[in-house]
Amino acid sequence: MSVFSRGTASRSRARTVIGGLAIAGASALVLAGCAGTATTTDSAAPAEDLTLKIGTVLPQTGSLAFLGPPEEAGVQLAVNEVNEAAAGVTVEATFGDSGDADNKAFETTVPKLQSEGVAAMIGAASSGVTKLFLDSNVSEGIITFSPANTSPDFTTWDDNGLYWRTAPSDLLQGEVLGNLIAEDGHKNIGIIYQNDAYGTGLYGVVKEVFEASGGTVVADASYNDGDTSFDAQVATITAANPDAIVLITFDQFATIAPLFVNAGQDASNFYLVDGNLKQWGADVSVGLEGAKGTTPGPVLADDFQQRLNDAWTAEGNAELEDFSYSAESYDAVVLLALASLAAGSTDPAAIAEKLQEVSGGSGDGEKCESYADCADIINGGGVVDYDGYSGGIAFDDAGDPTEATIGIFQYGADNMHTRIN
Image 1 (cartoon, helix red, strand yellow):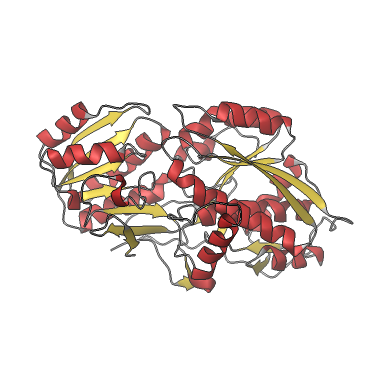
Image 2 (cartoon, rainbow, N blue to C red):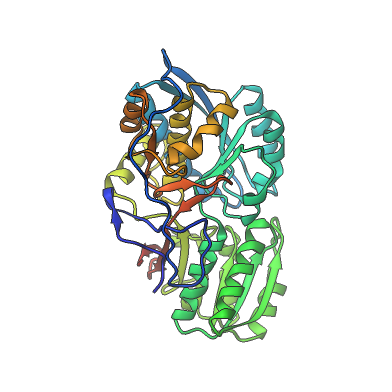
């Protein structure tokens, strides 16, 4: 089984190193450049604390609302730990709802955050939603930093260097998923997918990879975000009698999955993706035992999960059920704070100029794994290479991470998933 995994980093963080996500096949492994010795930064440490204002545009409502709690918890924990370090930057965070492309909650959140003078917005989770406000942030000179956008389109977006993400492109997840399905012995698959940047991009990669392995996509069908009836799409796919079904959806999965089961499809042959890989439990009316899915992210150290829960419940919230993109959200905040410190500024353009450097993407810098340790290096006149909970990151010139991991999960009889690779 191929998951693009190479050993285990400290804090039990497995990671994969991929060069610009240029993946040739299921066993491809492209090593990113190794970090050299620390060099001297050209920016002096600030004489007094910088106050970095950020906002979140993450899904509190809508079809990806299950991703909101772990992402917001990651942001909250990072804000707490940066501020507790008292090492040059104090972060002020305002939390806001992105909603989805249907309810458009971002249309209220984004202008509000712009008017408050934030240097950066963390979000959105949905690639399709980010596309609807990214140009506005670029025109306002504000950084947009997503912990979960996976559409390949952002790699070439005209963003003036103001768009960054800690989630890898769907080129990686699609390759891992396509190969997983083939390795499980399936020959003929059906794919149902959401007709947006996320769904069409991931669909295209899965199809290409699976067919390159010798398999056949015997049927596919799309739907639009906001649709509530999926009978026609299910009928199209079941008529082709596939031996596995890939569901590239958000929370529409809870409606679509029972339709497939009622049509005679075996849920153990379902394959899910990050947009619907949640701890479904009783929230879906059919058994999912044996179904598998993929999502970006390394194995999270237990202490990190506990710290996330502590930070989240301290704000009056219930304990987290999912941890998807929590590490990527945490790292987004830490990287912004480190870039601000390295720049000696809270100006978005100045911060953006330092993001690749502090992530290790420039090839130089001293390795460090926390804001406090990295800040000590910067304040001492050095250059850092931050390795976070989401991996080594190492941004390329487009603001994409060049080091990432895709996890494989499987559902049990309780409709809860566990990581199997």
